[in-house]
Image 1 (cartoon, rainbow, N blue to C red):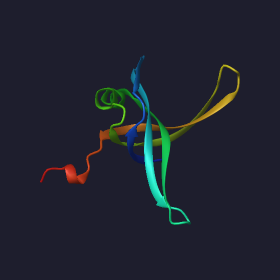
Image 2 (spheres, rainbow, N blue to C red; image 1 turned 180 degrees about the vertical axis):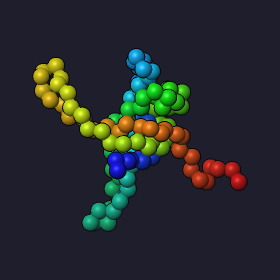
Image 3 (cartoon, helix red, strand yellow; image 1 turned 30 degrees about the horizontal axis):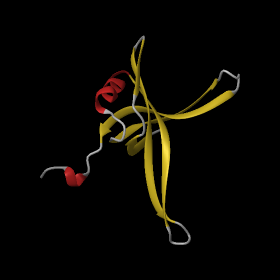
Image 4 (cartoon, one colour; image 1 turned 60 degrees about the vertical axis):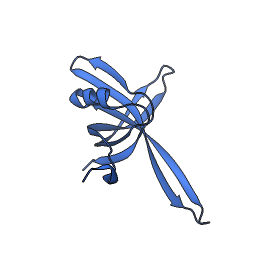
Length: 111
């Protein structure tokens, strides 16, 4: 099963384009991880992910997302490649989102 769930912050303004079947949205997502190295020093690491959403999910992204917003993305990992202007093969790994929602910490939920 190819499934991924990420919680992170939108890294740049979302790019939404129209295509013949609807909309496509692309944006970056930063996920953070903290751990202790072998010297017991705290290390903060950020990983950047390329996110792609199609159709109704893209429409939701267009209205929901803004730079810095913390969100949850569920989707699948997709690998593709293409030829750039210099005729070089470029390999891309991206998350194809099937669900995007705002992240709400449990302490923020009213009782």
